[in-house]
Picture 1 (cartoon, rainbow, N blue to C red):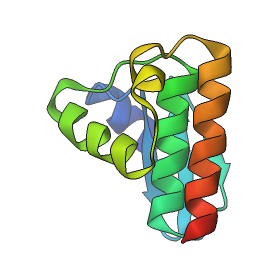
Picture 2 (cartoon, rainbow, N blue to C red):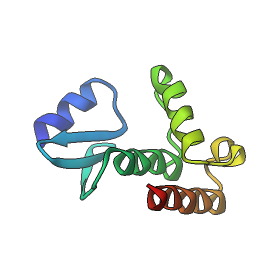
Picture 3 (cartoon, rainbow, N blue to C red):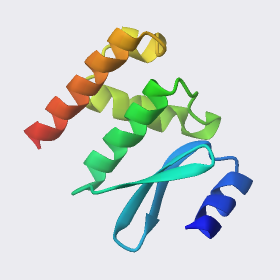
Picture 4 (cartoon, rainbow, N blue to C red):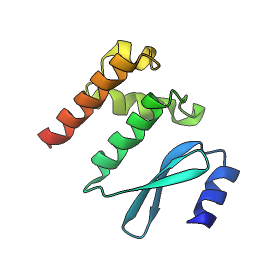
Length: 103
């Protein structure tokens, strides 16, 4: 895990998913939290939620992809634009969980 965190840090990853075997970790700064996820959409929803909660900008090369994820998950435009408003973030997370329960 330490090696994976070091490599991700060298590549400039602040927030991201690290997959080691069948185990998924959510990287947050210099630490990682283990998540038991059942599917790729669930893992991606945690990743999008982490960006929203911690008010971290998406990496420039991936902004379009994350914008697509937000639209697929049904996040309202104001949640995408005003990430630091706690109420909006909580509403967004509720929508993400609703999306996951539909699949």
